[in-house]
Image (tube, rainbow, N blue to C red; front, side, top):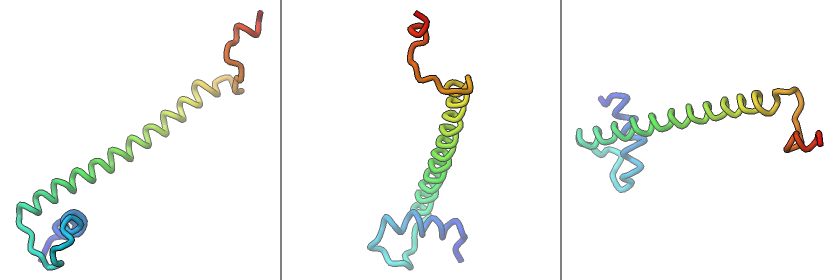
Length: 85
């Protein structure tokens, strides 16, 4: 009986690449190792992208709160020194 990890590797990594192979195809340990490596890369890149998106949202929130809305109102004028002359 195949382990859960082998089933995941075969179903999501190896089968989409080889559509001409039958469902009961026996994969070599080399193919499974390559599939495991690719699965690790896919999962790592997915989590890295998710973390970068979250960090970007948080930094945009700090930028809006700290720089644009620090006075309590949004300033529409570009240069403040021209208003006093």
